[in-house]
Image 1 (cartoon, rainbow, N blue to C red):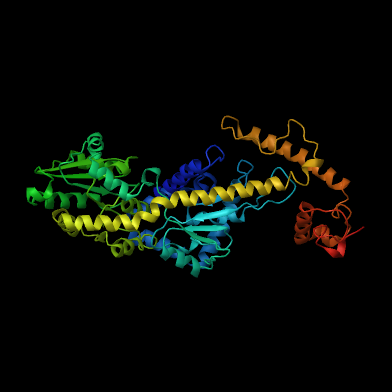
Image 2 (cartoon, rainbow, N blue to C red):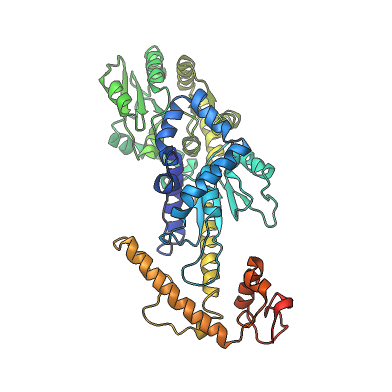
Length: 501
């Protein structure tokens, strides 16, 4: 849906590459767009439409999906339309990570069968919550192995939804919100760079003046929000500020707008003439960290990613709007932490921001409060990535134990058999599927022959219950993996009613 989920996924991908360089193959998959049927494959444009009318469309959709019967019907439809595509042989992961509340059930309920062994392999599943102050209940599924939350409020909500939050065997882990690599440095380092004057060159690259106070106005990655009214009102109020209060030595204010993907608004602001105030309209940019580096304060919608990144950079934050439900909790997070305020009225926003710019002491105090609130999020991405790497490595070792310790001495491995073919983007999907099926058949035949030679209890079992009961078959699979000679020993067979000598 929104750009924040993909930005968080890309941030985790970069962090995991940093923690385990060259050892992981990370693929970001948009389940709905790639595998969903109509209308589910239109979630992204539908999000932008609903975000333009938050009090009508978005509120209705958000609270309707909190109704259990409706969600059960939607989940059934999702399984019927998306599960087959997601469970295809192209995706054989050792770990699945969900970055969106509506992508929990499809991977959790897809049959995860390893194409390299005749044994069912349960793939670990983790959820990374990307909402800061409040979250939808669909984020929290009791079947997950780990759920990473960014704040105390979301942790408490996860506990109320049935996830284990205790110290022993806890599913919930609280680290922070995933942010982009440029924000992995703390606000204290930013203050050191500001005192050293190293931001002058950066401001020159962005065509900004370090002699003038800068207000950064952001509308989100999709350009959502009433930016035009805010810009006009702020420019009007800055014009009437005393010159010694609106600048750092020269007259005139400087206002920068990062409009996201709203190209029409960008062109409209560029065509308009601004008297006494410099206004620069920017499109979608990947240098948000640099703009925050030289700004004095920020005006933005209450998106969790932007709020966390502004806090890391120590920016006083003025919230101009929020999406009902998921972003409503971000407003008290900013206000109660002491580094910002909220108003949807452009005139009040302008009065508040100009008041901050006229009071240097208050601006500094709010900057320090923002740095304290953003400290967990600056290090949270690396902590989450470290845990995910451990889960992926543990899953890889588990798959290796399924092959090498017990079965590999008896497997006549030939040179053309590979346990896990290397990923090659240049090769076609059909070639990979053919190679994986061939490997699966060879390994299955070799494993079956090895098991027959060792007189495994499953090979000689004639019990109808063992042959047809899914639970008993699973127990036999576990017994085979911890196999030991002799009847009655631990691990030989877990179904005593059907063991034959």
